[in-house]
Amino acid sequence: ETGVTQTPRHLVMGMTNKKSLKCEQHLGHNAMYWYKQSAKKPLELMFVYSLEERVENNSVPSRFSPECPNSSHLFLHLHTLQPEDSALYLCASSQLPTDYYTEAFFGQGTRLTVV
Amino acid sequence: GNSVTQMEGPVTLSEEAFLTINCTYTATGYPSLFWYVQYPGEGLQLLLKATKADDKGSNKGFEATYRKETTSFHLEKGSVQVSDSAVYFCALSGGNLSGGSNYKLTFGKGTLLTVNP
Image (cartoon, rainbow over all chains, first blue to last red; front, side):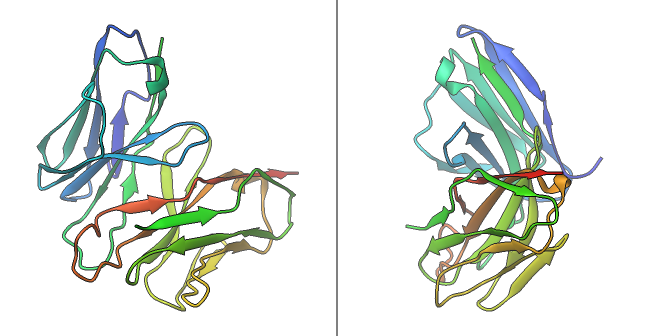
């Protein structure tokens, strides 16, 4: 399998549930990202991991907890979410360091619905 | 900070029509510019890119030219097809000569394109 794979593709969870989103990249990249895509809003960068260390956390609520056990896998652990957290969650990877820019490759996303 | 502004959608065209989606940016330094496409129910795919001024990125009949003087990267296609119906995102990355946050991509809000037969 190639590229960036996210599971599950769809997830419905209650506000008291705990669930995890999984992302796996087969591109040999060393950086991974979580983005949130909500209707009528720009893509929001949530977390960035470079060489398995978190380098960015954009004021994301603590009910979202990322984990990067190695350079190929990235998780987003979810607990006590709110209905407004319903969105498409996208994982991406890229190769760092780069002097000038990064080119990211995206997974197909997990469509999350919080009920 | 960096920002990307692209034309508001939705854009509705008939098959074989000419497409332009405008994109302008604000950035320090010399960023690289991208167009990503998101088909219904899918993630984002890189459509084309340009890494320096006057570069033209092209793919699948789409083109965009990096215009530093107008800070623009407009997407064009001469003859759209129904299969081009998707959301198109303009994005930029890098340009920070000291390195810094060059790992970040800054996206526009996206433009929904619908092509009717």
